Length: 61
Image 1 (spheres, one colour):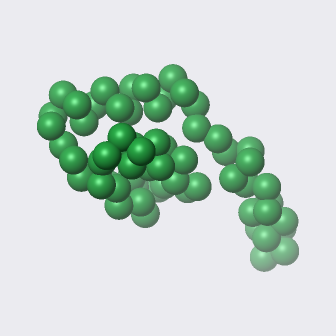
Image 2: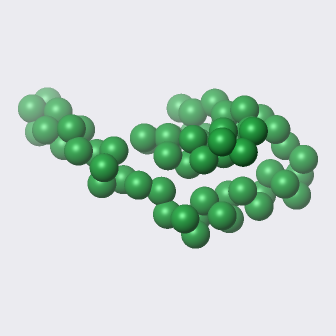
């Protein structure tokens, strides 16, 4: 557990969202008129936060 705790301290800094992926993710719900999105395996939820900034309701797991 000690190794996991040590890695966790910097995980959010090293696992940032890729702007190219974020752009593609924003295209998907626009074409389907979705407003609720489930982010399964959200990790640090960096992509969920981007989608939420654009008004989507997000369930991050």
